Structure formats: C-alpha cells, structure tokens
Image (cartoon, rainbow, N blue to C red; front, side, top):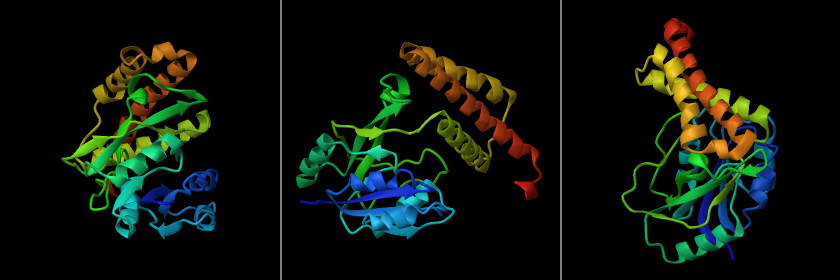
Length: 252
C-alpha cells in the first residue's frame, strides 16, 4: 500500500544517483523532482522512474523545494535530497505517524556517512532537520542551509534518514566550493563584510570546535580530514565575501 504523502526532491545533475533514490521510494504515493536545470539527463531518468518533474532553472534549493510543495497533491510532504535514503524502519514509522499525526511537522535525524564510515560525533551525529510536514509550510529562501519556516508544533521521529553527502574527497571539495560561494552571496546580500578576523579566526575556531570540542579527533584520519575541510570551507566563504566586497558592482 502506498503511503499518503508526497516526496519532494530538488536536483541538479544527479544522474549518477537519482535512479537509485527514486527506486527506493516505491512506497510513496507521489514523488516530485524539482530540477534546477540539469544537463546530464537527470529529468529524463526521473520521469522514467515514475516521478513528476518540475523545471525550476536557476533557483535556490529552497525555491526548488517550495515549487514541489505547491504542486503536491497530498496533505503531508517528506523533503529528501538525492543522496538520502529512507530505511525500512523509518518508512514503517512514517506509516504509523501518518495514520494518526500528533504534530504539524516532525524532525528527523540524518545518519551521516563519510568515506564509508558513519560519523557519530559532533554536528555530524546531531544532524536534525524538519523533513515531514503539512504542505502549507514553506522553506525559507536562502542559497545554502535552507530550512523550513518556524513551526510551533514539532515532533520527532525515532528512526533516521541515511545520508551520504559526498561520494569521495573530490566531490566533497567541489560541493564545498559551491556552498562557500553561495554562503558568501547570502552574507553579502545581508550587508555583511569580511574582516581579517573572519578570514583567520573563524576557520581556526571551526577546526578546534569540530576536531576537539565535538570529538572528531576520536574518528581517526577521517575525523581529521573532515575537520580540516570544514575549517577551509569557512575560510573560503569569507574569502569569497571579501572578493565580493572588492569587486565593482557591475562585476558581482
């Protein structure tokens, strides 16, 4: 039996994994893929797998999600990414929750895997997001780290989403560059400017926080590599912000 909910997935050049993602969602009544302008055949693969595809070119991930939510035919929406999977235990919990919902939205923990290993410590191990909600809610518009608008009545699901955010180190670095640039654009739009403090102290604190305070030092070399890259991502964001400050308006 199909669960009475709509799964919404934003995509941009996800041909390598969208078929697997959709193949694992046969229990959902409706799947909507909001594509941001893929050039690798992602929309065609999604349609072949039974998903409804919306073209939302050039939009933020939040705007892609919102376009799909507006088109949803079910009262309840589950927001996923192409690199996330719903284990059987979570699927069964979703069925029980939808049969008698006690809240307007639900948080779900992401069970994060990095280079083949689950990251249990720090922010990786406490990665909660509101992902199940009624279709009246929308995501706040931002280029990175989009989140659902505030909901007064939020519950929590016990079972996690399985998340593999990076295929390998190259993919990690490529994604890091993209997010750092988008994060800088968000800060610049809010009137922020990059200081010397931002360029050296913030990255240093990121490393200390992740590696020492959050315990990534206990994850061996994987924890060290991830913490260094987290710090470097922070440096890049403010370096891009500094670049935006230095450019003439016409070149931004």
